[in-house]
Length: 77
Image (cartoon, rainbow, N blue to C red; front, side, top):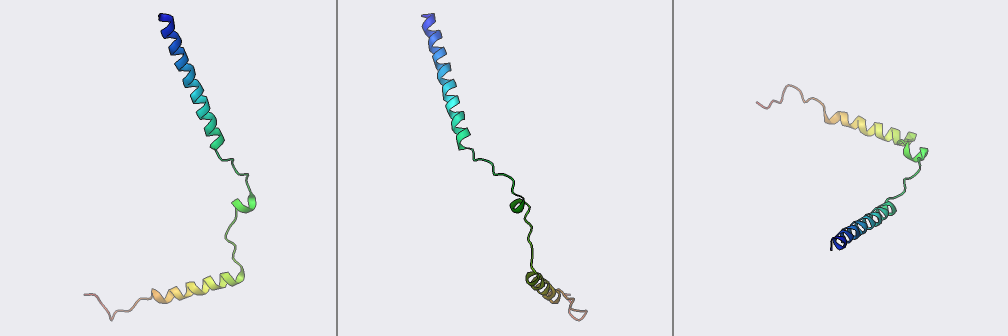
């Protein structure tokens, strides 16, 4: 009787181990492979050509007109 109980416990332990191994194996298979380092892609910086650079400078010059001080004539109080 004691042997049967012991055998059942051992069988449960074995089943748990097998289940855990299968689960770990599934996790390993699901992990995506890491991509290799690509210098051009990973260190890519926004490179502007002359036309884009001039357009950005022109737009930023227009911002100056929006934030001018209105003068002492208008007051909130």
